[in-house]
Amino acid sequence: MTQPNRPKVFVTRHLPDPVEARILREFDATVQPEGPALSAAAIIKGAQGCDALLVAPGDAITAEVIDALKGSVRVISTFSVGFDHVDVKAAQAAGIPVGHTPDVLSDATADLTWLLLLAAARRAHEGEKMVRDVTWTGWTPTQLMGTQVSGKRLAILGLGRIGQGVAKRARGFDMVVHYHNRSRLSADQEQGAVYHASAESLFQVADFLCLLCPLTPATKGLINSETLKKLPPGAIVVNSGRGPVVDDVALIEALKSGRVAAAGLDVYVGEPNIHPGYRDLPNVYLLPHLGSATVETRLAMGNLAIDNILAVLAGGRPVREVVI
Ligand code: DGY
Image (cartoon, rainbow, N blue to C red; front, side, top):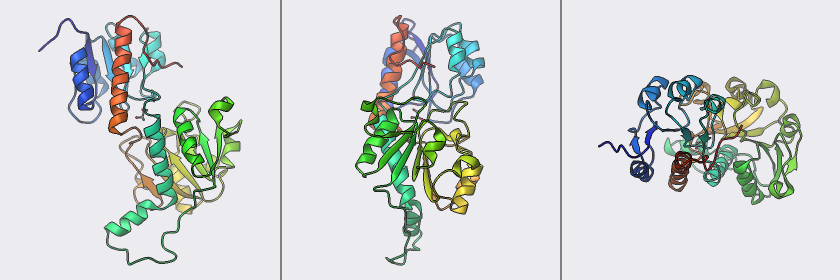
C-alpha cells in the first residue's frame, strides 16, 4: 500500500527485521529480500523519485548513481561506519549529505578483531579442522604450537574508535600498544599507547599488526611486499578494516614462506570473491566480514542509519555525517 504522505526511501539491502519494521513505520519504503548487492542500474531504477537512499557496504554508490538521483534524493545514509563504497565528493558536490554509523559498532568490531588475533596466533583453524576431520590422535607436547600473545607488542594502524577498543582489550593481555595515525592523539585517547610518526616505524615493532585504517588512496595496497619485509620475522597480521589495504599476492607469499607466521582476515579485496590463494593456506583464519555482526550492534546501526535520514528530511544534517 503506498503511503503518499511519508518520505520515500529506497533501501538497497535486507536489514534486520526490527530495523525494517521501523523503516516501514517511518517511511514509504522499498525494502529488499536477503541477497547480494544490487547493481548500480537497479539502485538507480529503484530509487527514482525517492527522498532518501539507505545503502550498505558492497553497494557501489558512484558519481553516476548520485548524478542520476540528485533531483530527488536529499540524503544518503549508509548502514556502516566505512564509506568507501560511496563517492562522498560527488554527493557533496550534488548537495547531498552522507550519514554513517560510527561508535555503535566499535565494541563488536574490536571484539571480532581480537577473535582474529587470537585465532591466528593459536592456530584455531588448524585445530578445529583436526577435530572435525577426526585426524586428532590425542594430545602431544608439540602439537599445533602457536605464538604467545600476552606481553607482546601490538601495532595498530589506525587508532580510531575501533582501534581504541582493540587497545583497551590488549591491556588485559599485558601487551604494549603502538600506533600510527596521521596525527598524534591526545593522552586521554592514547591511554599509554606509543605513537609512531610513520607507518614504517610502526611496522618495525609489530609482533602483531592490526589494520584498522580507512581505505583511502594513501592506504590502498599499503601492506605489500616491501612493507611486509619491515615486520619482525614471524609477525601476525590482522585485518578487520578494509581488504584493499593489503596486497593479497604479497601477504599470501609471506604466509607461505613463514615470514608472516599467520593472519586473521575479515575483509578482502573483491568481497565475496576473495583471492583463492588464501583458501588452502593453513595459517590464515578467515571470516566473512563479520566485524559488526551482532544482533545488538546491527540494530543500533539500523536505528542510527534511520535517524540520519530523519534528521536531514526534518531540515537538519545527519546525526553522524561523513566529513572528508
Ligand atoms: C562498516 O561498518 O564499515 C563495516 O565494514 C560493516 O559493519
